[in-house]
Image 1 (cartoon, helix red, strand yellow):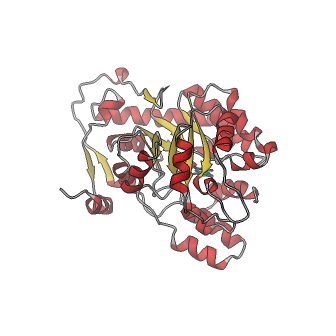
Image 2: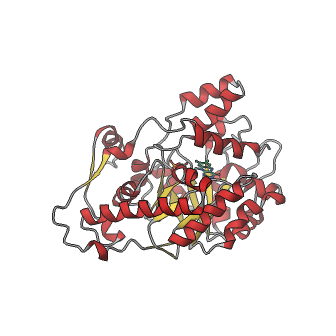
Image 3: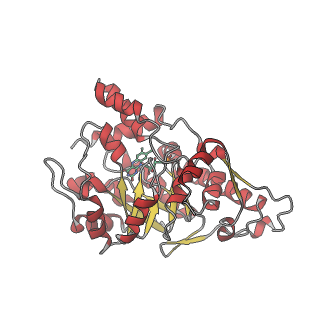
Amino acid sequence: MNFERKADHIDICLNKDVNSSRKYWDDVQMLHKALPEVDMNSIDTSIELFGKKLAAPIIISAITGGFEGAEKINRNLAMAAAEVGIGLGVGSQRPALEHAELASSYEVIKEFKVPLVIGNVGAPQLVEQSKRRAFGLEDCKRAMKMIDADILAVHLNFLQEIVQPEGDTNAAGCIGAIGSIAKHLPVLAKETGAGISRDIAQELRLKGVKGIDVGGHGGTSFSAVEYHRAVGRSEETLSRLGETFWNWGIPTPVSILEADVGLPVIATGGLSNGLDVAKAISLGASAGGLSRKMLAPAMESSDAVVKELKMIIAELKAAMFLTGAQSVNRLQDVPIIVTGYLSEWMNALEPEE
Ligand SMILES: Cc1cc2nc3c(=O)[nH]c(=O)nc-3n(C[C@H](O)[C@H](O)[C@H](O)COP(=O)(O)O)c2cc1C
């Protein structure tokens, strides 16, 4: 396998248009409370997630690892996550599981006291693919140990796999494989930009996963990312697939409702500020996840990441104040208005009485 693609992903995400064409969060509004009856200084943004205390309901969702430039990115993210007191996920650990010399780009995060550390392996890697054995429990344990992870994200990325030349497209047996891992390790099932529907969320819960990161559509499109790579290699069919499936997936706000099956839900996918985090929580998420938004600051310095995170928390606090929510729990009860195209999605999926 070619780990150059990890570097390609970073380059493309920084320099090309990889956004979904729709901004679903604009269709979600919170009801303003003209008399909030709380002192803004007393607002508490802290939460407990997977047994860990976070200063704010924010996760830096999986970005990278496994190539030369990744160590700096993960160091800057970890230093900032520790300073601010939020969760951090690393990118897929497959490169390091297959090539031990690549582990340092992940291991670096152990130098910092990040309150919630999330490992990462891919569901396609848990089943046999052509020319490659499946990762098993021991590999997943190694991944967690590599970064002292509190929970292991198993990413679901078949949209990406169909557009990449080296794609792993055998999805048969993944649910069982996730279940076998979840029997022994705490697992977070995580999509990567196409969202999770109710039936899949229910199956995952039955298989014993501890949480769901909906990784919904509306932000970074991995079909778009792979489209750019395919164009660069003049791969006509793959670039065509990437273009056609650019906007494939379940919008993040819809997926938050769909994945509400009694487990903590992390809402990643197109969140770009603290108001989006507040909206996601009002829809029922336990925390908001941001991935590509954190990439540019992470390329710069840990201070740049801290600065961005503090602005996101300031925005979250402002939204909590203006809706009269003194705590994150209370934020979950704030009335939400859903308009436009997004409301059509929600109406179409509403369970029948
Ligand atoms: C450069 C980059 C690399 C990513 N690599 C991974 C990965 O290795 N594993 C994973 O689970 N998700 C990965 N993701 C997906 C994100 O965690 C997230 O689900 C997705 O980008 C949507 O969030 P966003 O709109 O905030 O970017 C990656 C995202 C970016 C931008």
